[in-house]
Image (tube, rainbow, N blue to C red; front, side, top):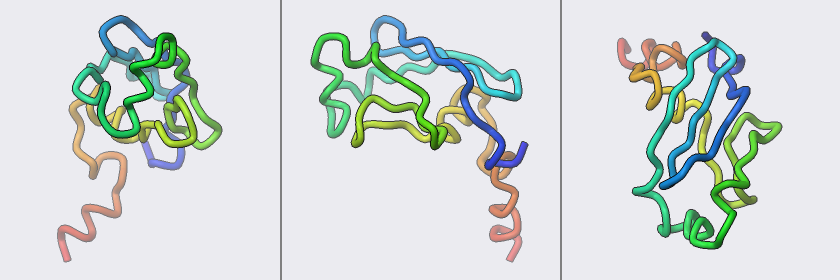
Length: 97
């Protein structure tokens, strides 16, 4: 599916900084974000209830604040185990050049 069409349709924050995500192509799964907790922009997750406040932004990111968000493409690749070239076909052309 081309990257401009791929987007999360549902998210469910879960305990221990885990996040379940469903995408518009039907792919779904849970990712463990605990390694990011308390670090950099994700330090805000230390505040009670912030991790649970995740939303899908109009720009397809999974977002907690203006500074703390995750790229939907990266989440998709982590959940599906896919390669970046699968959702970004232009990368193949660059690799072949």
